[in-house]
Length: 124
Image (cartoon, rainbow, N blue to C red; front, side, top):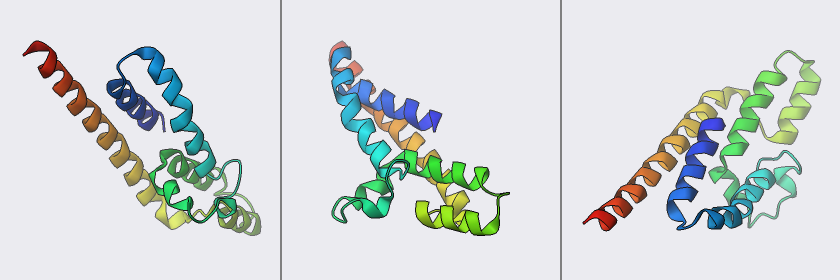
């Protein structure tokens, strides 16, 4: 989660021109992360036309991994209830990890490309 947050913040920082702009964009980016993660409200409570955004939110995958780790030794009935409510499938833990790594690499690569193009436009 930390690596994804840092690489996403790097991407935002590379897109904006001035640091104060990143402060204005931050809530627009991270509030949907909180809403789509299923932490505050279940994803089923989100209108169906907005649910597609959950698949692009790295916080959702991190929360699902945390749920698998945190509740693996609890009562089986409680664990099933929590996993069903949070839409967690413990068998997809490797997929959650892979998606987090891919998002981290993607955000970092895009940020590096943007910064590289800006550097070439300034120095050429």
